Image (cartoon, rainbow, N blue to C red; front, top):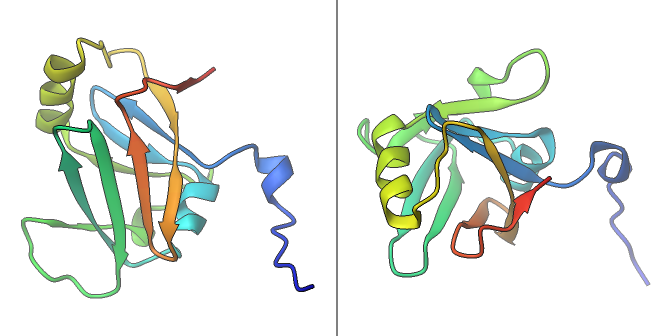
Length: 124
């Protein structure tokens, strides 16, 4: 059998994102799930209340591509600003994101994660 252990996983907790009224912040493990890309694109499935984030290496479109790895701060987090989207998310979910809420991520492929907002499974 062959294993691919991530030796930082247990100490770092779990991969999650924090959603607040200012935007979405990614912890170190969620960044790793995306493959630490230079850029990301973010999509939203309104029917399933799910956010999809995909890592890309080339800036495809100025309006839909966010700078990513260059934004990493000293604590290893990356935040993207998307205030208007969060306001829409508040209306759709009747959830108040003025207090930040953490959500687990689910890895779909090497550079693609999903945040399922419909369950409101908030990390405490």
